[in-house]
Length: 326
Image (cartoon, rainbow, N blue to C red; front, side, top):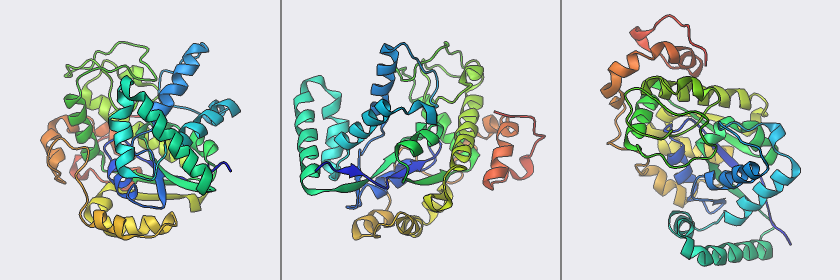
């Protein structure tokens, strides 16, 4: 018997919008398998294979047409191979073992045992997946998993962009990324060497802008791509929440999400939802923390105002004439 993935839960959102918090909480469910990590390493294998075939991508977007049968088989196999139902083993696999070449035998041992167990005892299983770059792959992911349920997390642009600014400035190093950059960076008021977080289409136009403009572009593009992608998804397979709701009423929102994805609001989930962990933050959480960057943010309000309106947020007295389109 070959087990298979059904009705996966795919979390969508701009980086720093609360996706990691929700992913961490749902990852405690016994009903959901997980990579306990983002799936970038799986996509990295795909991009490397494409490079060998003479095909290169220079942004994070993948379309419906990019998923041929061979590519579909690769992704299903990799998600099947690495998805686990043990948080400690999953974290050890992806945070330690997979990052050291000499430990590859242990990785192979774990994944083989995992596959054998699933094939022997489980006909089908569900996974929860979270990778912000999937903002630009909604149609691709929907074709890969046509019965998936999508959860979209939105966040006030000021807070989200403020967090992106902090993230860029803390992550100055430039690791090789896939897809790679097709143009050198000359981002103003930024001393780092790498591009961080998502790489939207048309990023090249921002390679010499201010960092605030880059982060605003990432926020607008991520949310617009999600909204466009979800238009093609049936209403009963998509669910929208806000970061503000999730952070202020974590247990209540998570219980609603559990109902939407048809899993029990178990004691394991309830326990962590009632005392949610602090994740992916470089300073203590505070709803007004964005005001530390208010001077920078005011310069990009014209960029974010249209999307703020679409998502139901207001800039208050800071509204400006709208001329920006991503």
